[in-house]
Amino acid sequence: MIRKNPSGHLPLIAESAYVDKTAIICGKVIIHDNVFVGPYAVIRADEVDASGDMQPIVIGANSNIQDGVVIHSKSGAAVTIGEHTSIAHRSIIHGPCSVGDRVFIGFNSVLFNCAVGDGCVVRHNAVVDGCDLPPGFHVTSTQRIGPQTDLASLPRVSVSASEFSEDVARTNIDLVRGYKALQNEF
Image 1 (cartoon, rainbow, N blue to C red):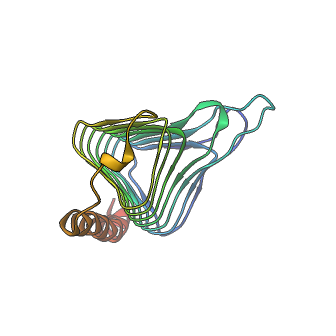
Image 2 (spheres, helix red, strand yellow; image 1 turned 60 degrees about the vertical axis):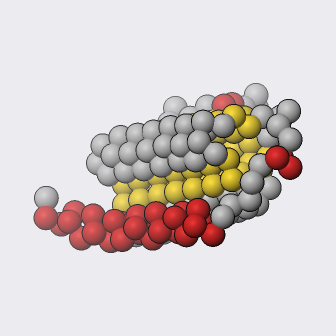
Image 3 (tube, rainbow, N blue to C red; image 1 turned 90 degrees about the horizontal axis):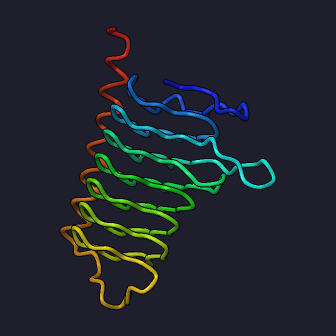
């Protein structure tokens, strides 16, 4: 469902993107080319800042927002998802937040008030809250990263983890093409 927010903003969705009919895209959202938005995902840009304005939620080209993901923002802060990035099932991305290019965010992970650099991998059930991850860092499953975390203790992304991330992104680009072709059959 594509709908306006109370401020009157409508989503801008590239023609080449695929948005499942059960997903909700609301307000000041920009979805670029070849993006896959899976079933029951919610991308909602509807809160305003103190001056009554808001920044957009932007999903970069060739990225995927999988089933049940929620992307929202507090008080109109920006949320940016880079290109070739995968946000896996039931994750929550809550702004202010930026996620770089070629990033993998695992199932049920939560990002809030943070920046995740290019090429990072955040595995399943992890939390990144209130800190910025430099490019190429690996957050293991169930790990919590916050302002007090010694980032030097985090491992770098391995070649196999990077290849996995790229494979997920590539698979979802194929799904965009497949689902777009099926749209004419219903």
